[in-house]
Image (tube, one colour):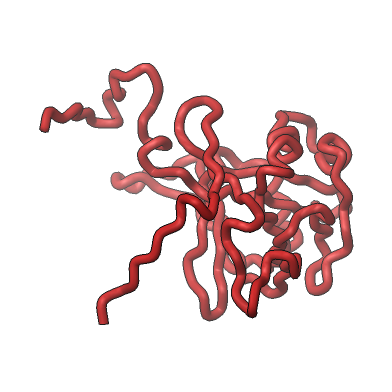
Length: 204
């Protein structure tokens, strides 16, 4: 095998940074939040995942101290939404760089719905929603211990909404909602489909 090797601090030498394409496709952290004055915010983050199941903990990372991070630190609450093929364009629209006073729900023609446990509204059109309470907000550091302008927000899932159409015989059907995931390149996404599914059981 011929290997393309690079040290990130010195540049990658390619047409596009391969890091995000290699660590992918990635689930999308489509996050709604609200500041202490009640202003709503809705934004997608491509660095997102689940980190624990008892209690369930999810997290997203923000490059820069953006509105979502500030809002969640102020209120201690947020919601996550499953980004699906049907809502893909709306999700992308909510990524627009706008002033904090702009409501991305309006911008993306989405409906804010009251949540059951937290005070932050969620996207009514989303088929899966996690209502979350902030557990940790961490500023990332480099290996040298230098503070970075990157923030990791972790939240405990305290409420879950699932469209019953996605549940078959008591089992959640991952592909049924056609979730989309972020790939590499300036705009690559992937869709999960049942045709791409295969089973591999963990050894006993």
